[in-house]
Amino acid sequence: MMSTTYWSDFVHVAGRLLTYKRAVDLMDLVAKIWPQLFSDIQICMIPSSSTVPGILPMNPWTAAQIMSKMTSDESLLGRFAAQLGSLSVHDIDAKVSELWRSAPKPMVHAEVLVHDWLENTEGGIRPERFFNRWKFIGSSKPPCKLCSYFFDEYPTDVQVRPSHQNAYFAWRMPDVYEYQGEEASRKRMLVMDSIKTRIRADVMRILSEKLADGRTHDSSAYISLWRGIAPGPPNDPISLEATTQLLESHTLSTKHEQGSTDRKPANEVVKVLDENEEGLDGNYEEELLFRGRSAVRKT
Image (cartoon, rainbow, N blue to C red; front, side, top):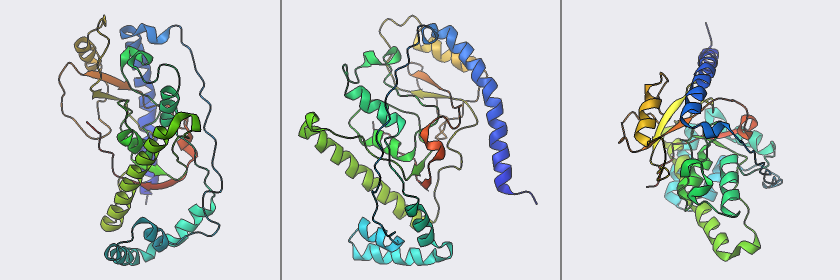
């Protein structure tokens, strides 16, 4: 009998092969709408963040110990103990130990790194630093769960793609330096606390429901046209409405990564997301920690 895993992988790879042709067609179309994207290209290399080794104690914690660090509520701890007991067949402690001993070295992921670089260089995150004044950071793959949480909780109006909903062990916040002042440090701690709260909620839900969403592949086998609110420049020669109609007239898959099919007003810009290039970002070799629920976008 054919393995369902092999079949899933086959469907994914076959879909990506079709995506390459669609990507070429899309690039040809976009070159007609925004030719400036394909002329006088300048590439700015942003140094990767430093890794942080030795972040975990020498001896791995058990799942129960981890739960005890998440809450001091005795009733919750009792419930967790019962839920962990029902999952004993999966030997969670052994899986935690294996991941623990892999000695993860957290790094700042690409989308967060770009945002941090923009915020701390001349011009900040003003609209003028973004193409067509659309405050959006693109990426070859959707952001991970923790990057999505970061952009949800951080006080910024810069947007990223919808998350693939997987969380990875080797993730960390950007550094804050002394010259940035106490406000930057305080903001970092507030965002980190908010992310921790959401992670705790994810873990509690996963234990309760014994089901996690997310997906096996963190890349996609289709191209999506995602509508998002992003004001364009006041004198844009290509109107947003015309751009929307032209892009939507092209025969492409319009499946939204979050499953939304609702139509938005025509004055909202279509963001064209190329979901190619599997393996081009750092997440490709990262260890999957858990698959969490999708982030709730702030309004």
